[in-house]
Length: 254
Image (tube, rainbow, N blue to C red; front, side):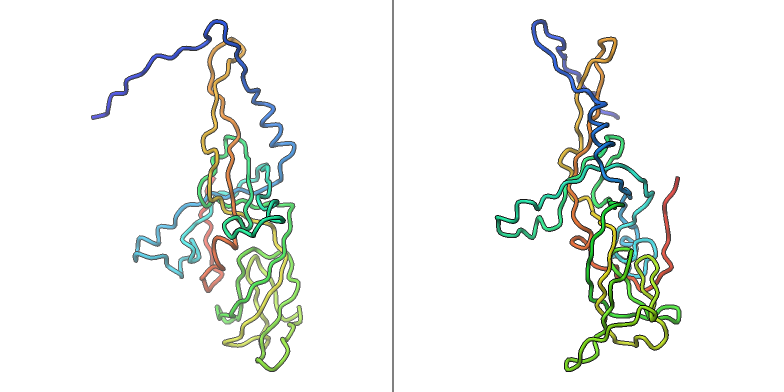
């Protein structure tokens, strides 16, 4: 049996009260004209965790992270760094790599959604241990790779690092596949590479931002305003995927 909701009276258009309403096209125009081109991917918890009571490292859906990212959609995003004041203050680990995002109200951002800024480039370095998959030695990185700057292989504590020849490896998405003899079991490498900047949504400052305005015939109308959220760089949220393989599954749908 459904609960009965009692409605309370509302009082609008009180005589003598000046009314000021938002003009919604201005908000949308600000996002569209000044925003970055970005790809928004919805995040859903992977149900593999319910199968054995823990995230499955061999799951081709979440790749051992517990999260599945679906339906990539290109949108406009207003983005602003939240670290601009750390020049004069003690560095805060909690705010490391965070940014504020504003999107049009029809894009309902949620926790762990992924935002990729298409026209922004960043450079990172990672230490990885090679693994064997389908008769090939390879490594994976946190971000999809745009360009490899260099890869160094550890030889021994008493010898210099060995810089690998670019001809000894190939790149696909976030996987680096080595040619025969370039690396072997137990080798560890450091890779420096360029990639597009990515964030996970961790907080919604204004999950709901609505107001009431009068339409062109003086009727009350609910107006949805742009959504504001806080994101953090992907490598500060999750480590490199604990998944040895390249047979990934795309669960996106139209």
